[in-house]
Length: 457
Image 1 (cartoon, rainbow, N blue to C red):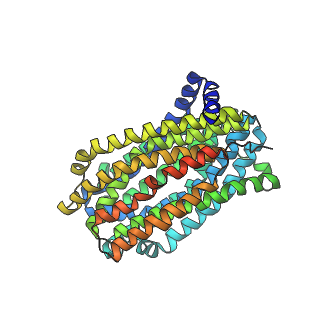
Image 2 (cartoon, rainbow, N blue to C red; image 1 turned 90 degrees about the horizontal axis):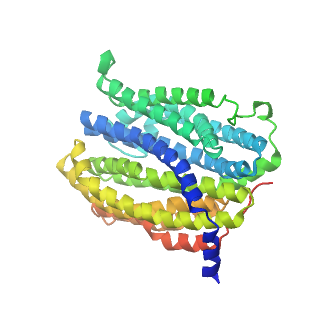
Image 3 (cartoon, rainbow, N blue to C red; image 1 turned 60 degrees about the vertical axis):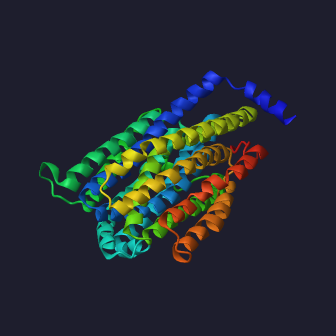
């Protein structure tokens, strides 16, 4: 019976329309993700040409922004879930209210992280390393980059609203322009080109701050057009109570999942950072490569949430269900392609940055381990963060992270690093266990179809 039902759902899909919509949404988001990851890659490559310590310190310092992004992504993901469904329903006014709610919460998060970077940067750096030179370099970076953290939350609200309201291309163009500017300014301030001071790590922070300011200005200017959704400032302090309740209901599990994942990933970085400068440097480069190659699955995951959400919000539950099944199948293909790509670029990556022989050896091993990790990362990103979240099943991500990351991967990595004294590669392998290990559980959850629900009112 289940097979017959699934076949029936598959027939309901217009394949040409499905792939056209997937391409239309996923490619700009993937490009946007690629451009954002390129900033970290640019920092690593340029600072890697200056000194290993500069590169490593900035990589560790940017973990603060990574944690901030976990809060911001939970808020904007909740906005995207409700926004996609209300857009599919054709309710523009409620989508404006959702925009307002996102601005409230993202603004609070941005102010808190800005204050932390300005007031206690040394204490923040000590979370990740005890190496005094790295703490000094990273603290100077955070004092400047903290200003960009104040702006990021607002621009992310604009970009999220553009994605769910069929303006994904302009949003991607804005992000891409900001990233290109960031990379160019990186070169100017890190190396002291065109008469600018040679600022090294501080230059990377200044470049990031300037590009974020321009990104927000572009978001506000483009969204002033008639067809775009803008924050309803006249209702900013008078938002519907029921909508706020619905938003929090989606946001809290997402926040829990984001924090579990974000703090867990930061813990991985901290563990590797305490295993020596060579291990920390190799891990920094491997993280940049991982983020670059994950861009396509990030794009498809975001597109999955929007496509499934649009169908469910419009009341086409069976079609949304069929979309989810097909997107899950596509995630396996993307995972295998990502694995092949990691293995293919490994020789090039190892030669591109200045590393000690020991760090270079670690990096080679980490890239091989990461290649197999990519299958789980792609499948879980599309299925959990796309399909399940698109239908409002946001609690599962937190459950799976608590079990697979916090009860298995992190304890193993901690024991391996500080009790059993395993090699950095063995510890790194422990940090990759969670994504691969939870695939069977994710597939069982998908087939329960708890995510097939209309969240609109």
